[in-house]
Length: 327
Image (cartoon, rainbow, N blue to C red; front, top):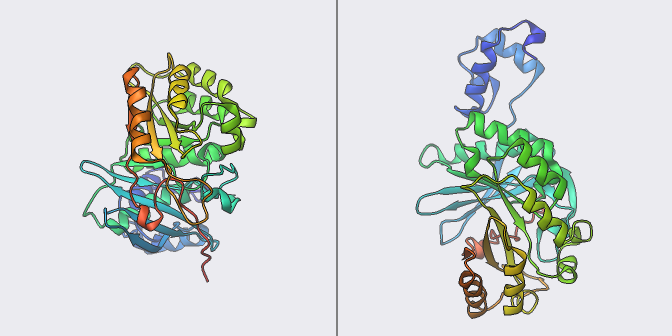
């Protein structure tokens, strides 16, 4: 755009600085530009400005954020404090088309993909909200939507976040239901980004019931693809496994999982199901979750039981859903 109106390249650098380092709300705020230049730019473009329409905080410090989009739709994100980190979970789509039966977001269906500026804009909006009092250290693409079904815009957003917001690719984790071709493409184009794969079952019958994508990329296809990923020696895949009472939480499931992961550089995040009103599944008891974990650990598989934050405000994994439309 700048080349088209005869402006020098250094103006692009200035604009990026004001947009992504100073987090300005509009072109008029770029005081480094002359008034005539600002007026010219306003006639050609605008700076996107996602607004936080609602913020709900839980007793553990987690905050669920409702972001308003320019077309009146909205998405949710979650800001998760920890002892050494401040993680922002962002959305990549309005809704989701994957149809995972344990996920509340799936009940929305898919409305549309988010643009790269809308994905990165969630980070900018939160940084404005924080007003320098805290710094986002990690980004997880685990909010609404399947990121790899919006590959182009998601990778553009990651480039914006890493190049201009100072967050390393190694501090970004993308979660997928197992979209095999795009998993391989992500590792070719952005090998530093961490990948978390939602497995959630140890048989195709159970996984196909829980996750329709298994009918296209079954467990064997998914795991063979995982083995082919060029993972660097110091890094591992994350296997996410949502524990559902009486469905996939038995010792037999744990032993099958051990066999499935043989030779794969991976750690396992065990996620006790986060219940919500109308859910068809239940969370396993603490005893069952610990027993599952201990079976894995006994066979030298690194396994964590992930403590869900934000449960009381429906901000935990699988609980994001919006019905809000701006007036």
